[in-house]
Amino acid sequence: MKKISLMIAFVLFAVIGASAQIEKPVTWSYAAKKISKTEAVVYIKATMESGWHIYSQTLKSGGPQPTSFSFAASKDYTLVGKTTEPKATTYFDENFKMNVSYFGNSVVFQQKIKLNKPTATVKGKVEFMVCNDSKCLPPEEVSFSISVK
Image (cartoon, rainbow, N blue to C red):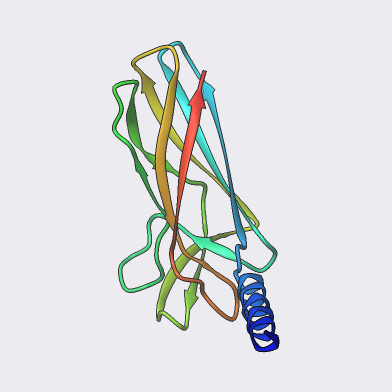
């Protein structure tokens, strides 16, 4: 009985220790604003912890994972153009041996949509890679659902 109790305690501490190791330095928030009866802009904001950054959508291959967006097909709306981003910071990264463009602190991506109904729910996924000065975390995918009223 004592061995079983010790084993359970060991497993419990191992699980707690492992979950404390998971880093999530990026949080995502979402909003939408109608700009006319038939058009709206969807805002997708990434906020990074101090020292962390995510990459632009426009990176060349051979470097870090660029941020990318995929939107679910819907009869309620149509995408207008591509997802836009503000001007990124660009520098030569010695690790990748190329110029890379990134965003620190926070960044707001925008996607214009044409509404086929008065309201819509824009669903999709964002895939991104986050790094700091000493390491990069594996690319991550986050689903979103944004109500346009």
